[in-house]
Amino acid sequence: MDAIQKLKSLRTEKDEAINNIAIGAAIQFIPLIILGLIPARFPSFSVTFLSLISVGLFIPGWIAFVQGTLGYAQSKGHHSAWGWLGLLSLWGLAILLFFPDKRNFTKQQSSPGDQNPFIHLNLIELTLFPFMAAVALYMTGVCVIAGFSSFTIAQLLEIAEQFSYWPMEAVKFGCTALFCLYLIHQIWQSRLAPKAMLGRLQAIQLKQILLITIVDLLFALSAAWLTLCGISFFAPGYIAERLERQSLTTDVPTLALWSLSAVVIAPLLEEFIFRGIIIHKLELKWGLLPGILISSLLFALLHFRFDVVPLFVMGLLYAFLYLKSNSLWPSICCHAAYNFGIISVPLVSRLSSKTTFDNTDEMIQVYQQSVQSNPWVLVPILFASSFYLIHFMWTIRPKTNSQLPYFVNQSRLATESAAH
Image 1 (tube, one colour):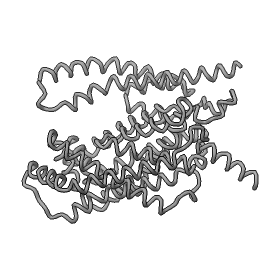
Image 2 (cartoon, helix red, strand yellow):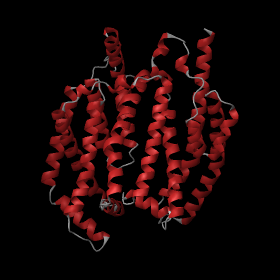
Image 3 (cartoon, helix red, strand yellow):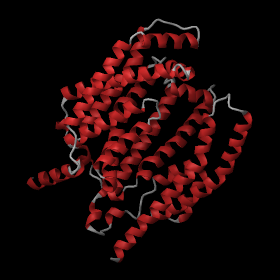
Image 4 (cartoon, one colour):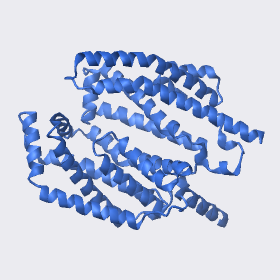
């Protein structure tokens, strides 16, 4: 009984440290992010006032952040002095993340309920922390490139959005690779079985994947074009920026790195996290349906794009596929095929189009006319694809008392191992 209480105390200690870090980071950076998003036409006195608030909040946020890193280092079984790395803010957190957890909970026997490996995972530590660390490392890479090139940091960040400079794509690729290494590290620490999470390759049905991907692409593209057309009337600058980003480079190294990230790494990483880990973790606390809905919403919001609804539907679709097949491979394949389609559309459009525009207003006007002249095509496509996706998800919907794929596969693997 004492061992169980000690284990619960250690978990609470670590969870409190993680919460302090998250709260400290939010207090430090959310006001600065809001300040950066304020339009240039905003009154100068209001900007000054918000700047003072941001500076005033940064110090207490930093203190809370460092208190969290001190506790975080100690909760992982290291001397609390290592927590002073938090003085380096997100850069210090990036180092602390890779410290081995000497108090690995899964090695300690407590109660039968604790045999579920998802109990020991903290979603903030698993997803938010490496994201923040990746941002810090990404900005470091940008600063290094700026030091060795003729570009400023602001120019490099703008270039990065246009996928037109291979060193920037290499930095993104490196940050993604580090994120993957951290995920592998956490999986090893928590004793999760990757085979049980991924399931069988035999669950892949190419005809079904191709059909689902085509319909999902039609739904997403028609919804996006109609939405952007509406946005263009009250926020033309946003549309102009998106259209300019479609002027993709034909530089081979840049395209290769970008395509590898979008078609291979992103589907594997996102499906493993959102459909694999997050659904299993949230099901423990709130049940299966809330777990599916919340994981899909997080998937949509964390893309930081305007097309939240298509991304949310995509998250639901892939979650249902995973739960129906007990394998992540179908959703990984669908995701990869979808991303391939999404990056191919602007690339083909750019290579085939010979139209040039003298100014931004002309570009937006042509875009509005192209969408408005074809509503009889886009609207029926949107409704037909929506109907098919809803019908398909209804036919494969999981039962509320369904056993989750990880445990189905774990039992199957144990049976196969015993048979051999």
